[in-house]
Length: 263
Image 1 (cartoon, rainbow, N blue to C red):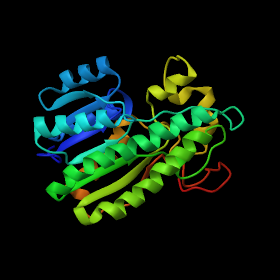
Image 2 (image 1 turned 90 degrees about the vertical axis):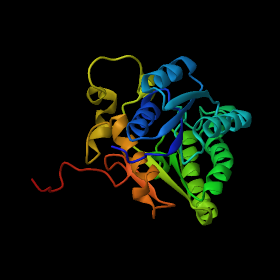
Image 3 (image 1 turned 60 degrees about the vertical axis):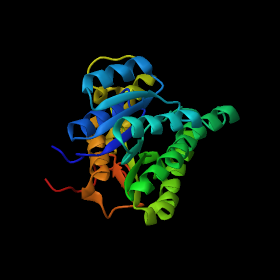
Image 4 (image 1 turned 180 degrees about the vertical axis):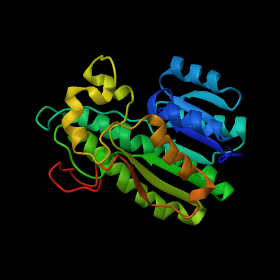
């Protein structure tokens, strides 16, 4: 406990899923947290659950003025911004033939431009304090390619590349920028495939994919949040421009039942 004592964090897409797990964990570890999301009811409920160390800010990450207000809220209420987790994103499952220019641009605007705007407005505040940590949530798809996810894959590669450019540009100001690359994670995005009972790991749709992973299951949101905690803390003080896969080995390769393994 206390790994983020004295720090102030903004977490986007924080009303549910990975973002909510990250906000809760950061607060448990001593941070004051701005819960940034467009889902007001869920975001305010989470802020109330966490208590005095959390505030909700309605933020559409593609709207520059929303970012300006969120940063001002953090500074006015808590004094600074020490960490930013660019977590909010969308995913659509469409082939290139099915995708439209409008849909492709929407994905890029939310997933890439949203992170750009966050960094643009948070970095000057961090620079004044001489330190800060920015964590961009990319994806295992930002380290490989998957059919039927062209726009999402392109956007997550974009986040990965932007992370490295930002790390180079902001490092002399004491700001570290890293990317986290989750694999299949048990979040509300899974409900895209419809309602179900039981474990998400038991869905027939996902069994072929999971069978190819060394750790053949979905992550829970807290497992990815712990990686963000490490990067937000001073424990990672010499880590910048890195990409950390939290994907059960998905990006390593394809697991084969025929290959010998150590038992």
